[in-house]
Image 1 (cartoon, rainbow, N blue to C red):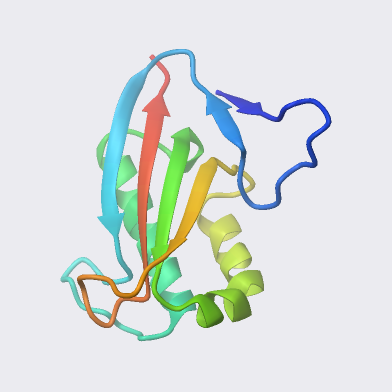
Image 2 (cartoon, helix red, strand yellow; image 1 turned 90 degrees about the vertical axis):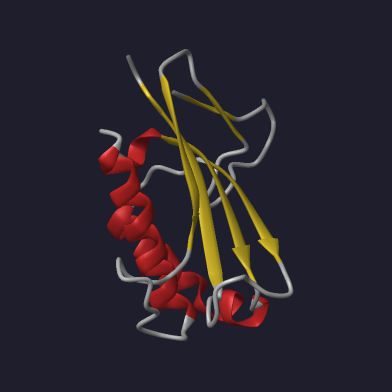
Length: 131
């Protein structure tokens, strides 16, 4: 896996502009919200939900024999931009706790609502496990 940064571009913070993957087994992780294994939200706050959603991503990856550093793409959907902006520093710490310093190609999309209430954030991921 190779991080792509075109010549002359400033380095992004907290994501990669692109990831190149030679080959491997592809693992698609559906949108994961901040609920536990019994589909219960333990908090209505964005940081604990982000923490749980990342734990859910890591658990699904592990089921496929994949690890967080195999993630090459992640999309985040958030329905509370002010809460996200206020919690960015804390969210970064949570990211590093679960994913480390690996930053895949990422998109953040702000939406009006999520299907599962009181969900504030949903994460989906694509990972490539080397052969």
